[in-house]
Image (cartoon, rainbow, N blue to C red; front, side, top):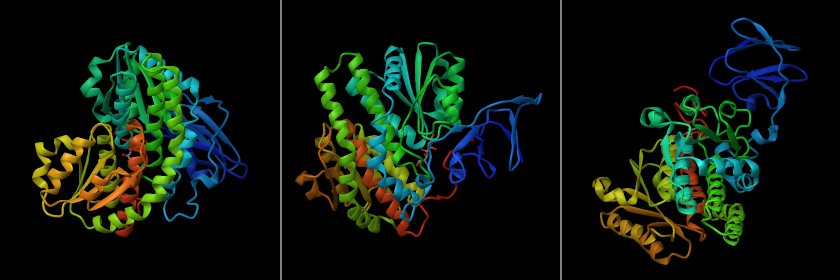
Length: 435
Ligand code: M6R
């Protein structure tokens, strides 16, 4: 078999009883975990017993030892769940626990470079972009560091001309293969900006393009819908924000330790939320599954949660959905509210609780069906809601990690109840390797 790598990822798997090739080592991990990532313009000639690498166009032989990837076959099995998506939703207490152990020296180095930069951009696509949006609240509120979240496909046009050596970019891509993100990495390198990344895949292309990267440690994600990698990205942003806030003397040692302690509670709280909201999510999904349109509204950092909940619902259950910062609803979207229009509010008991309750009342008075996610002891919110999902009290900046969990379940059950396969949504691929 002759392989040539150009832009999209390509790996040779070196096995005992044969050699393999795929765009992702997950495809042959039941045969071997020894892989050779090919570089652009390299050719591999593989047979069952041998492989040779060459650099093109002059066919210069290349020698490269295989690396061992930390993916075991049981990690890519469904483990008794009907779909990978559900398995990965339920893996979040574990993946969050692993993410808490990301390598400290890398966190410190990225925090240092972000702190030194004149401007910081956070760049990603889809779900990873939503983590950037939530992250920008964390950096600003906890560390007093302004950052600009930008959708990768728009970055070069919108901000390309502003790049210079004093600018830093934190690229977020679970796969590390998203073409729009890789293009930003190459462009920013050319401009001598500091380019860093958060990724979940150790051997991915992005790790070879950036100066520094943090590996999320969430374990392989097979479902097309990003779930555990999203909450893990949020946690990495939070860990970084905490490091930066210390560097900028925004918090003392005692507060730092207290915040770390709160972070350590997150896996346990995530487990509770999943356990307590599963049945309710099924019940709400039964009501939502035939909807023509669903609205998701949040405020502050949970505007990102509203965006992410909407993306999950439309990409796997194919239900048209819109998400807005709740403050925007009366600037237009409220015109679409009719009797029984489902509106989902993300309304924790935080600094925007009073305003969002006002938004709930505005929308309720137009006859909408009100679904709220709020603090479990929030009786007032529960009483004005048609459906209420209670979440344990949590620090405002950590709330997106817990509040997105019932929204993932809601999307999953809506798709499953419609008889759709949540792991294989139409027209979508796990990694979008074309621009
Ligand atoms: O691998 P990446 O994080 O770069 O992927 C970005 C998006 O393609 C991805 O988040 C996509 O939006 C998912 N299907 C969302 O569930």
